[in-house]
Amino acid sequence: MHAAQKKFLEERFDAKKWFGSSNSGRPFLKEFRFSGSEIKGWKLLKVKDTEEASNRVAHSMWSRGDKIDELLSIDVFVSGSVKSAHEMLLEALGNMQSGSIERKMEKNTPGDVAFGLANTMITFARANLVAVIRNAGRTIVPVGTVARELDSEIKRRLDSE
View 1 (cartoon, rainbow, N blue to C red):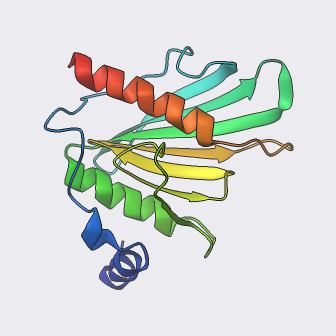
View 2 (cartoon, rainbow, N blue to C red):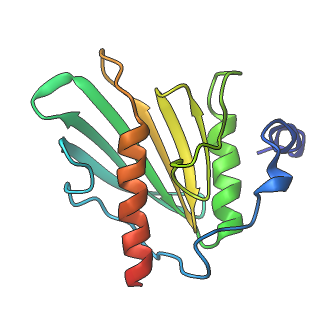
């Protein structure tokens, strides 16, 4: 990411308030793999693990039961530190084509820091992980509950490390 774009994103998303800090303490995960049981009521259709820059990424596609019109794309990026995860979060926000994305601050918001577009897309960071959850089907489904379930699974895995 170019320095000017990074500076714009840091200002736009008020990064000085959250960048580099985590409520999760010191633990971090070395890897993240989907098993298919992370999200109740959703079925894992496919998963592909890749490496992008210095991040390991689990790309996945989910359907709600047999409803193929209700699809979610969930990517989880595993970084080497909280700081590099927050760099990835800024990059993910920079790749989104909407000026309506805003920081989520509600009590039950997932992650250490989260951003979303209404309840149709959410991206959050927890420790050294960044999750991006987007609608991918014809029918728009709310992503808040899915994000909270995924975050609970991430916290469970962090606690067991």
